[in-house]
Image (cartoon, rainbow, N blue to C red; front, side, top):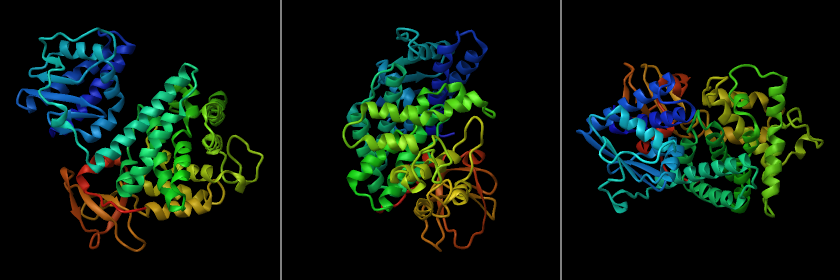
Length: 449
């Protein structure tokens, strides 16, 4: 494993440990397993770096020594914010890392203790690096920051709704302005980043992905800047009503019973009501999107609307398309993730009934037969990833991510599809490749949507 991969695993394990410690005491078997995993990850990272390694936190990012952990920062952004709230600016790991010290760190991050012992193998805020040593302002870093700040908005909305406080849409407006700007200036990179998934924070990551896809589709439909911002707020907040749904229902692994389904079907009304209570003039459309995104083009969905099918709002019909696409390509507790091509097939099958056929057609034109982030099995047994949408009749731009012998490549290699046969589409979870993690490595071309 590379240092980047070890750091990514450590962050996942620390997040799991802090979560378990909030639920169970240190002696509980589940907490013990999480502690063992986090200790082993920390030791692997420190020993692999020669015995000492520093992980720094700056603004929206984790750094490993001087190296930006781009994907890990986004993937573990909730942990990043929790650590920052606890005043952590850096963590130094010294080999051999003691399990008791990792337990202290986990308890501190979980806000169950007041500090970490100063002379332990895990030390806080002793980084030798300054802000100028670490800051980066690449185009991909700006895009990821926009994504992270949109996640922050959704977490803030969730916190407000949990305490029955009004939500602040001015913050959402600022966040989507940045996301609109980045999606327009970096369309190929944005589409690749929209493959980002999170099991723990599904609704938040899903909502940001739907926002990116909706901005790109809205741009293709000819919407102007101000219209795109209104659309983006609606797309970002389309599922906030799910915050009112019990998590046990959202994550239920089987078929929902009548009472559970009733809870799910209420989330459009809950979301619309929350948005309307906070909306400034011009933002009310976001409430309409939240209310109508499951109503379906033919009116057969929920909630039942009294208007005719073509009277569903333009933005609602657009978001219904991107919402379905991202949901189908994401693994849930009750369903496996499907390939992008399978998701496009669902949209095509429902075109004219569940979905507006104009938006289905435009969306397929936007992402192509092989959407960015698609993983393709080639005739030699290799797996390649699509980096950009191909024009009609053209072969997609590919990078090799897995060799024919099953070896994952540390660095993706450009490969021509012209003389290769594509055997099948494959799901990222079955390959061990996270397309969004490769954003900085594949060199996607910046071009207007």
